[in-house]
Image 1 (spheres, rainbow, N blue to C red):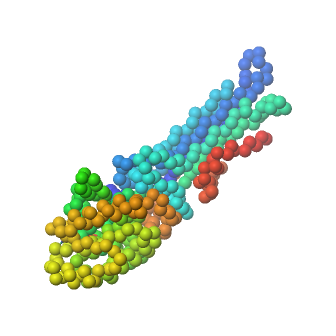
Image 2 (image 1 turned 60 degrees about the horizontal axis):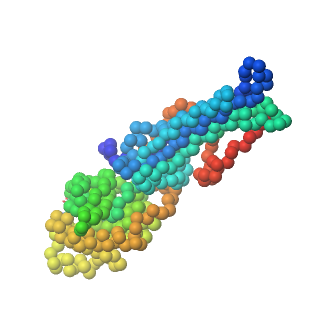
Image 3 (image 1 turned 30 degrees about the horizontal axis):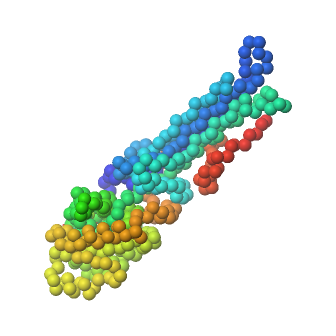
Length: 390
Ligand SMILES: Nc1nc2c(ncn2[C@@H]2O[C@H](COP(=O)(O)OP(=O)(O)OP(=O)(O)O)[C@@H](O)[C@H]2O)c(=O)[nH]1
Ligand SMILES: [Mg+2]
């Protein structure tokens, strides 16, 4: 497959900064014997932060930046001086970016709004200096707290385009033609299967200056869930759509069967897709005369609203837009912001990315904190690390 600029899946290695150590310094000055502890606190390690940016459309920029490391906090110093905090690293990502643990496939978080910031990895806290540990019975503690260790994690970022309508159909069904006839998007169109290799979004103008977005994705074929064709990987781009527009060409031998096949592949990918509102468009209707259309009407699948359209003559397009607009604005079909994110399915993973090998400067094991799933709740971080005087 040709290298494409549309990158919707990337594996990166992130590491937060470790906290600086507290200082064990004693005050020293002329004529001040036993000046007492005056070691300052270490600085906090840098965080790794994700920030949503609505001007970005792909994860391409991360292809060239696989290692994202924040810097460490500096150690505290004499005279109660604090160590400098490490620098945070902010990763800008398009809206709709979902983050998974690369090792376990576990869902971690999702960026859904412009400007939204999510702390992916927290920097280690700085240790307290010895001045904090003086007590009446131990006025000169030889102890200062070490900084908290850094956290390292390989994560997979996956992009799910956020569109109102998602197009679903076999290759050559006329998906891209429809998108280009009702929006300004110019996807490639040709009479061979798999013309579309990557998803694209178009903005469809509706009456009265209103608009909605439509996502064109590569065609799917029977067995896509087992990896045939381009597989089902691109279906994630319609997971967040409010409405699915199924497209089956008028020259189909059995519309009902074709519809069942498409439905089945979607179900295989994510059963939750079945809950979405569906519309069926019979495309290329310019090839039908009235008689044929009458005939086809009898063979349509049941329980789904159907429109005959032709992207070439414009037939049925206004009606289609009306129906889509109504469905999108139906309260019950609003873009679902709370879909349950399952762990990354092995079949949805991109092999080249998964096998991506990180060559990095090694970091000492005891400078790293190992995270378990529970650690993703924030409380873990609010606790002071226990003080353990020697
Ligand atoms: N007669 C007629 N032909 C059409 C119509 N819409 C699309 N076509 C033709 O059907 C072929 C496939 O169209 P595409 O829009 O590329 O189909 P697609 O569904 O995007 O296909 P993939 O990207 O391969 O999945 C092209 O040759 C189009 O010219 C239509 O309304 N009428
Ligand atoms: Mg196409």
